[in-house]
Length: 392
Ligand SMILES: *Cc1c(COP(=O)(O)O)cnc(C)c1O
Image (cartoon, rainbow, N blue to C red; front, side):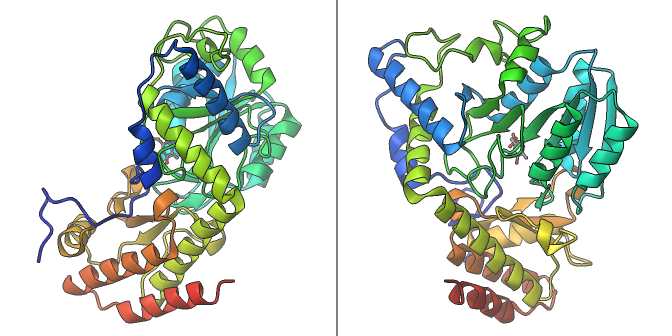
């Protein structure tokens, strides 16, 4: 049989968005309350408190009502001024991309760019800051999703804090799937969202803002106000006694509320453990099949996405088409510089279950064999099962 394009896939094993948890889907069907109904205002305040608990924050996070690109762009627009010098750390497509936003608000940009299968070395950041004492803002992407690689943001954060610069972190595809929190990496602005590891649909940004970042944004006359890009407008919106700048995305909030309940109820450590185990099983299987992991080293491979190097002579787009058509499984491609060079298996939220690694390996190995690549799918599956079966 073949899964045609108008049939829904069986498994969406992408690196986001992912299908939402069934409970989240039910949450999306809750009553759409009027935003000034006291019941909604109370709900909003409680929801922000749950987000604060999940992010292990000492301050209230801000919810912005657009998927996390809104939050990242808003961070650049609000925090960066023409007087700032920005050090942008680029180990992949998203890290590099933030530099273009930074450049819109300050002409002074320096970068550290690594190969896109590598990670940023904290020592290189220390050296760069010593060479450029004028740097006032540093930006970094934690999990550069199109590469499936993790940057050591807690170590980088310590280096940046010692220098005194503000730190902007994109943790969109890592938060909720591994141990990362804004205060642990000393971020001044930390952006994440519900649509990756929290297993809710795309449509919101969760942002942690430090006290000194609020002060810097308020002192910036060009920081957006009365705008979709504004962070400042939302500072007090969490409080049931304060107005909203505009109508919040009520249904999305209902979904996020359930996603946070699920995350906190299962226990963050347990959630991270199943992401880590799924990725570990996937990596073991990939290697046993005779394929390669894109990440230069296992230590920097993401627990929320496994990027598989495209074998010599294989057309990556055709590979994903075959995987979908034969098995009804959807993977993500690379992006920009990594497009065509790798295939990404996502382990995020509801798909961070070890058995999905087995399904992914079967589909990938099967499709590759039909394309003439002699991989050992059975060995891959056995290796993944061995990882799962020996786990405590
Ligand atoms: C998913 C993601 C975002 C959100 O952006 P989209 O490209 O719109 O999905 C931002 N940063 C990272 C690292 C992401 O993985």
